[in-house]
Length: 215
Ligand SMILES: Cc1cc2nc3c(=O)[nH]c(=O)nc-3n(C[C@H](O)[C@H](O)[C@H](O)COP(=O)(O)O)c2cc1C
Image (cartoon, rainbow, N blue to C red; front, side):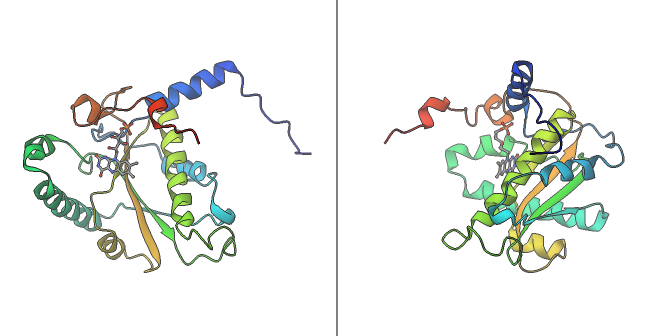
């Protein structure tokens, strides 16, 4: 028996959780106000409650506060985004160029997330046929952090327009950590229940039912 009684996740809680899921957003426009001291650490603690294959907890978080490293990340984003723009179909290029795809300049906090591919934790359980389950675990941690942040009115923006090996070098982390995410964190300029890419007409959300197959 657990030491404490489990909480009751009653209907009002369920409704709030639904709202949290609906109002979580990828944020690229931040107010410059700083986050309170300890806020990022508190979010990382929530992220670490995520499930992981074999309980391996392969997530590693790097707080990026150093000006020179941030500048290097910014330059890397510019380089990768220019390549991505050039790779767009000609018909999409102008629309792509108008998108804002990162809030690197205004987000007060930057957090890089890596997956420790060499971790011995979990002793390989669950990874024999699917080594990628380790990275999936790290992604689960990002999502837990994202929700915990939104519940505190903190916005998160996931930046993936970056070259993973260069990120490992820029942030000087072990070679066997694979790059998972670069997160911008801060208070959002606005709250929204519609994704920015939907508002800009780039990509609509599908109905959930359209994504379910029966076999
Ligand atoms: C794995 C992953 C990578 C992403 N990379 C970027 C990115 O580089 N730039 C960006 O603006 N948004 C990025 N996003 C955010 C998505 O564009 C966003 O989640 C999607 O448009 C839906 O919007 P929402 O998160 O507000 O619901 C990423 C999201 C995920 C899950």
